[in-house]
Image (cartoon, rainbow, N blue to C red):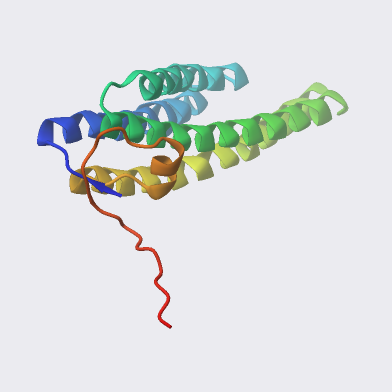
Length: 177
């Protein structure tokens, strides 16, 4: 759905997507590899997760408190991408837990260490895959903001109040008799 907005409103709406991309850039693409390279260990992987969680909590808060409908709709869209990222976190956590349980049953300290290293590297994959998917989706969302559009599913879940709709992105089918 295309909505008539001002440039100032579009800039405020764009901030939701920019914040999400900055979260990905700093905490996933820079901080996570840094913790691995510095040899902090498995607990070091919780630092990017905790910092990203704080950004996600802020995005959630803003999605519920933004005053302008267009801005709030884009914060909600950004939080929908955050939920996708959290599914990646859950998948990573499950794989890491399975690896930790298997490592506990291994014989010898060196074998336990090897198993933890292997499963830690594998466990990062669901989050990494979701990071790549959500970055592409956020890039397209930035384009939506620039055009003054809101996805139809967001508009259905969160109906607009007193906004001027310029055009519907998807037209209703007509039947010719």
